[in-house]
Image 1 (cartoon, helix red, strand yellow):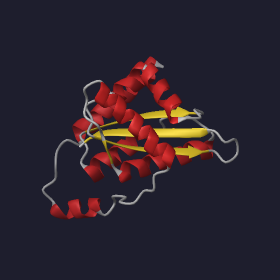
Image 2: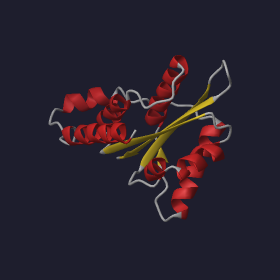
Image 3: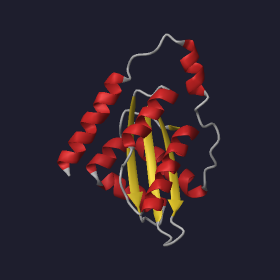
Length: 166
């Protein structure tokens, strides 16, 4: 498990390093902005989870995070993937983070997932009890997005929460 985590962190670090240069090509900026998802409809559970995360961050002296619809849309795509494939994982995180870096200009991106928590408080408590997830919640980020989707077959909830520094 630690080996996979270290491998993922190494890949993310390489992606961050490779994407740190900006382009002089103005037309690519226009093309990228057209990829940005502007609309996302948040449900009450998603809004409550974001509020709990921000309340926690402020309680430990950190800035609250601003929500970005595009990041919530990417989170929703991952929830739908996990539901369709009956898995709980971070598959394709590198592609999600590269997209967020390219489209939003993020400098760093991180992700928490959770499965089968019935309430936002239970999911946030579990993240805070896990050192890696807590590190993401307390990270040097400015924005976040979230999606919480229910598997229609078994009623279990899938949470994907993406953090970024923009």
